Length: 186
Image 1 (cartoon, rainbow, N blue to C red):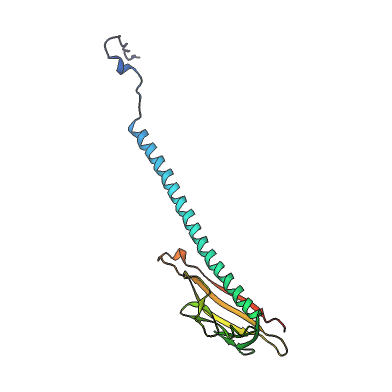
Image 2 (cartoon, rainbow, N blue to C red):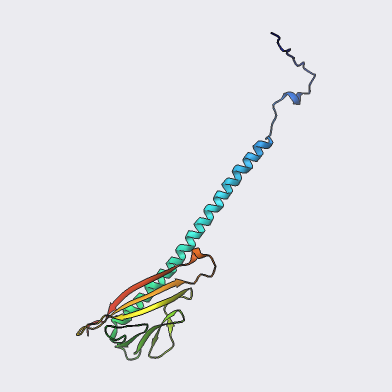
């Protein structure tokens, strides 16, 4: 069997830099590093977008829930402090709550919904909004649950919706609320 000839390199035939190991990166290595760095960068950007979306959505929910708490507490406090219920009549419903207050300086007190604003007015004065400008209300219903020989009881129902300034449907939020209160016995 024939053996291939082996060639021995003699010192001085080739310059030294040909015989030393090469330093630096090959094109494949550079492309691999760029690809890995790009994937990490895209992952970080995607994670940041998700965190921003969740944070914004939670702020929207918090605004709506906070407004609902203020509205229910304000209406319930006024019902508890009222002398009598003018509207709605017993066993009926109405989009307007009209109360006779013990303090004649604010009587009658009216709570109603106009153009998406749930408001309260005392003794015919201008209506004061119970919610922020970023929230709209709808489907306001007061149900008089009073029975004979009882001070009076009102069920409160309404829906609050966040006014989404963007066209992103992910920032839409709407919720229905139900509460109630009774007049304090004299």
